[in-house]
Image (cartoon, rainbow, N blue to C red; front, top):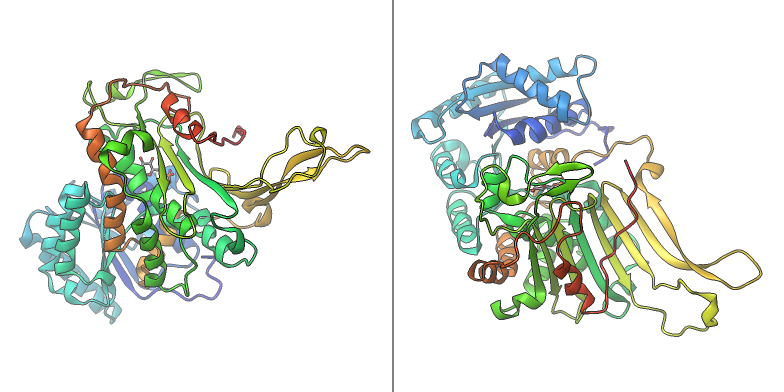
Length: 507
Ligand code: BG6
């Protein structure tokens, strides 16, 4: 999506109902995303946003609450009265989502917009609620006749989608009994990130990479998604989740799919998703007995983070003081197909890591024959492609170069594509902007299909089960501001590799 809507092709008229309207996600992400789409003229000519919640808000108070979110979290703050124009489309519906009778208010609202706009709009239900509320709300929604309009009505379900394979499957069954698959948008916000979408461009819009993108040239792949925050005020949620469910089952496996998938024939939603499911299905299923050779877990202790004293995970609010929930996970995967035969994919993610970074490293094999004299290259290294997703947004290819001078001295250097340098005028849209626009336009390509979510659960289930059955004996086992437990180093060192960490650029 280019930022400004130059061709003025907008989605059809839409009413967006946000369950959990007074919650955090709406204030931090959803309304700011819609507001930025509005500034960039991507919102439909006719649209309305209706926050649904139990809190007592008037329309005005609700708008004030959202405005605070704009000023604090939006990439663009109020400018030239835009908020006033935008917020005029926002209203609040106080409603108990458990009360089936209350759903008539939703139908009434839609009819009112229909009458005003003289058009039948898209109706989007965004479920920004705790996962345990999703089945009940979906069931009640399905009783209002609006949902039988398979073309215009859509339901957006936030992650986590299910708590394990069984519950994800049950939720899929339930939803598919009420909605067509095309109506269900299972969101994973990583798929909306510019730099993540660019992986497809890099791989499939260039002829250069595809011939070497396989076991013959690639030695291994590393994916790191490291955060410098702890669990903050989300202890209650995180206790039910942990790093595997929170990050690996979804964001990290999605990144892995983008790196490992076969070239799509076209960009149709199902074509892209078929190719990703094929990767997930090809990931070698490890047995519970093998888990210790393939997976490492960690939990942060109390300590210091960039000069500030921070609590250990077990001391966080709403966390069990004896909790065994992991805040770090490192894993090794193999993908059993021709392209990736015997090529390890190492992934790791954690809270309170030394550096905030989401990065993919493709490590190529060494040159087959080294003709230079040994003294030419003390720092000789194989080629490497580094795709930085955030906060750095660049792609760098490392190769050997001759250092200027009379001697033949070789050094690794980087060829860098940097978003900010290449597009200094453009500001990349937030992931939620891209994804909400896709929902309004009816394009599910960057959303998870039912089988995709279940295939991803299949991959992590043995690890979840093995970890639940064998409580950790060394938790907490890493200090804040580190790269996780020592065992994570051992996991990769056993194969003769190291985790690749780029030098930290201070903000
Ligand atoms: C969310 C997780 O899905 O992704 C959070 O629930 C995590 O725990 C967040 O912090 C990371 O997202 P981003 O976009 O900041 O990398």
